Length: 137
Image (cartoon, rainbow, N blue to C red):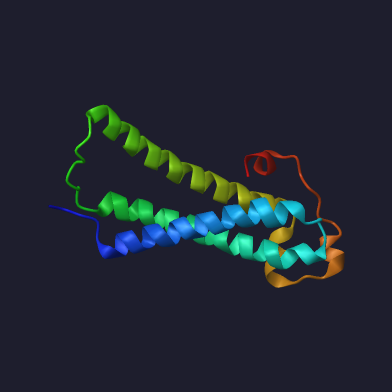
């Protein structure tokens, strides 16, 4: 019987924890903070977690593609199709949110500010863009 390896299970849970923390930070911390210099450290943590989520998602996609086929679940063919597509859509969503976050931070100039300096004059030029990346993210 083919089962998931301990490494696959571990990366799954690391992924789940990072996603949960990132969503909680965005919902309960970042959305309630004014757009000023004090927001930078929280934003930096959120962006690092987001980048880690994208990298882990890509690793999981490669691992899944290369893995031996697992023993089928004892469910109907329709339910198995739903489970398969649910996972694919989760991966796609994570990649789209991650890519939109990178585009959003680059468009607003936040990548340089967050990772290379927190000078107030740099942050003064940051605007909330109503562009597609902002809406998607």
